[in-house]
Length: 381
Ligand SMILES: Cc1ncc(COP(=O)(O)O)c(C=O)c1O
Image (cartoon, rainbow, N blue to C red; front, top):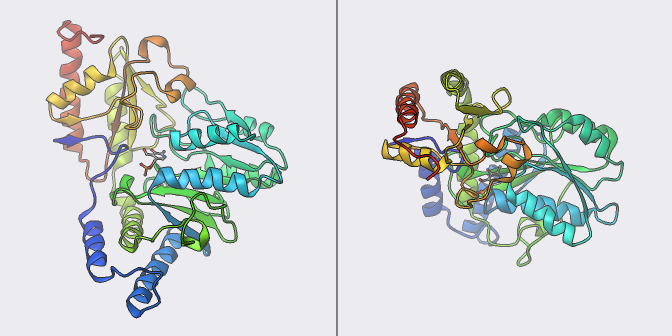
């Protein structure tokens, strides 16, 4: 089986699994406990935090471990909005964020917050001029994702950070769930004030993620309990998850130069360009591991099923919205012409993808197009 749905989730790396198992066996004590075993677990947790901050290119910073990207995004959006609400209730985000950001800001709108949604061009790219125009000195929070999960668009995060810092007191949060390990991003300095990362997108363990924040900048708590994670995120901290996440992050960064995503993407794009009834979304603007295409007059599910019959796993769009039959908000935001709207298919490569696999994909793809031409597949069925 060829697995090209790595933006939905990745297979855990053996080395990450080994760390997770070892820490579970040897350091299972509660890191909040005062006994020696607890202290040992706490030391491991502290070391993981320090490693993560340094992997994010920062000298100092805080790491709040969460159950994944969704919770980290909720914590950043709701936690910072509430913390700074006396100053301002103005928030800026984009029309193409993941639902864990969009639904969190939608909740804030019901609580009296005012939200500006930045529009995007055909490639899913925001305009920094629009950001600058919408930004106010007192804006509470800006949240802009680094890489879009449906079409792969890379947003100009460093430029956004500079504009925000020069013109506003707003906290700048970026959802880096799809970008971390593929593109570089740094915390504080020239980067955002807060970054979301999810372990299962970088060959880590599912149900684990984090919000990293620059030093001295912490959100308000959005859940309540024993006051762990400096009172920001109550609940016993999973030391195995923290160690495994730090390890997955380290491996992603260290091994990034060996991954040939760029080469594979340009091969794929050059191949796909040859077909008239297929458009490539964000061809010049997407991250190297995500190539999203749309077929004219064919449902995405038809293509996905054909590929599955041929042992290649693709997805119609993001995993979270692929069961929802309506056209996704990202596809609407980029203004994809009507004939293509139902035919969106995402090809997302992973760390173990080989050129041979891409070649096999090309062969199956060509066969699919031939069948369509001969009318053997009624794409709209
Ligand atoms: C861009 C983006 N943000 C957030 C998330 C949510 O992460 P998690 O699955 O860890 O909750 C996802 C997952 O699909 C994502 O792609």
